[in-house]
Amino acid sequence: MRFETVIGLEVHAQLLTASKAFAPVATEFGEAPNTQVSPLCLGHPGTLPVLNENLVRFIVKMGLATNCSIAPHSIFARKNYFYPDLPKGYQISQFDTPICHDGWVDIELEDGSTKRIRIKRIHMEEDAGKSIHDQDPYHTLVDLNRAGTPLIEIVTEPDIASPAEAYAYLTRIKQLVQYLEICDGNMEEGSLRCDANVSIRPVGQQELGTRTEIKNVNSFRNVERALHYEIRRQEAVIRGGGKVVQTTLLWDANKLETREMRSKEEAHDYRYFPEPDLPPVVVTEAFLESVRAELPELPEARLQRYRAHGVPDFDAMVLTEDKDKGDYFDTVVFGQPVTLRNRDAFRATRADIKMASNVVTNLVANILNERKLGIRELPVEAHRLADALNLRAADTISSNGLTDLILAMVEDPRDAKTLAEEKGLIQNSDTSFLEPLVEQVLDANPDKVAAFNAGKDGLLGFFVGQVMRMSQGKANPQLVNGLVISKLKDRA
Image (tube, rainbow, N blue to C red; front, side):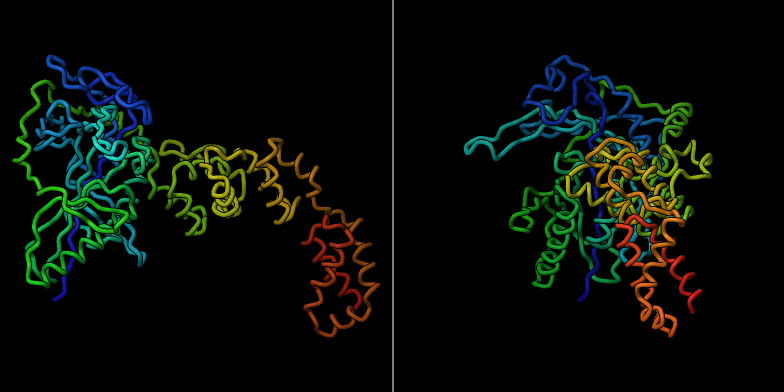
């Protein structure tokens, strides 16, 4: 019996608002435990929530970026459950009226084709606190700094058919929240968390199989590994004559296996009811248009723009993966990041676009990896890199000289031309200087001149190399190449 996999993902993105969802309390990561709390966060009686407008603004941005319909009227609900890190005994969320619904994103598959993943809903909620199990051998510790931090939950339809597709989808969602600047996408810090619902069914069967849910996996690779393991486990259960039990699982990244956490909850277990202390959320056309005006150029549009400018496909994909890297590249080539509002203004470029893409995706990427830096921390500012590229484009320096110059610029903040002159990287293109050197080389090697003229074309490199040596590497090799060919013809 052959099986097919059905996967649905729920992604929680912690938003980059300055304060919590319903309380004027900071949301900085890494502060001392239980220092970013208030009576509202602690669930004290008589406290009343007040909606953070940026929570609404950020979720509408995500809804527009994922082609969702935006509900003009939605309400909050209380999701009731008891856990040590939830002092109120409920979580403010949305239930049957999500603010964003019926959207989609396209993902690229391994064979280069695309697949559309439908977004069922994106809704607003607040985060719970954090239970810490590994700092005390006898007790679980609770840090409530995270309690009340604004979240959005992005829920797919069961359209994902493999762990690889799940990985591609998560990569796209992370890319979008970073482009929109609503979430940093840091899974290690819990800014982006994923729950995966997975089931299998015999190929051709329409009815879905019994699903299990894998909770709070902390990296995309672990999501992929957990799904592979759970698919194999469910297949083994069914082939052995058993039945898959609907349950909630945790992924053990050390043992590379899932383990049962609790029986799977359904909506009725949470006793949802409308939040009595918050009014409905009303999204007016004016608000919607103001958010739409703030949208950046999204990854797919940026990718197509780069391709249209002649950027090689691989480079275009690398530059699009990370918004900061794309912004840096745009600044090198166009003088500033390109946006939806200004993209039509850019026709001419400040630097050769193919050369720039090659340098940023290779040499610059290597520098960042070696130094463990982000592109924003690169000591070579975009305008200085553009100046270095222009020196190469004008044949003022060689290809090797460009590499040496950029490496020097990492350590020295001076301008490209000053450094190139100081490092002796400027190529000599003075024919009155180079022609006598060419003549000397040819005069010193009459046998090789005769051999070249007899058909040994490979000797051209010898003559050019000799001239370069005599010039101490400062001669313009392209110019030398042309001069050698011309002089050899004269002696044929």
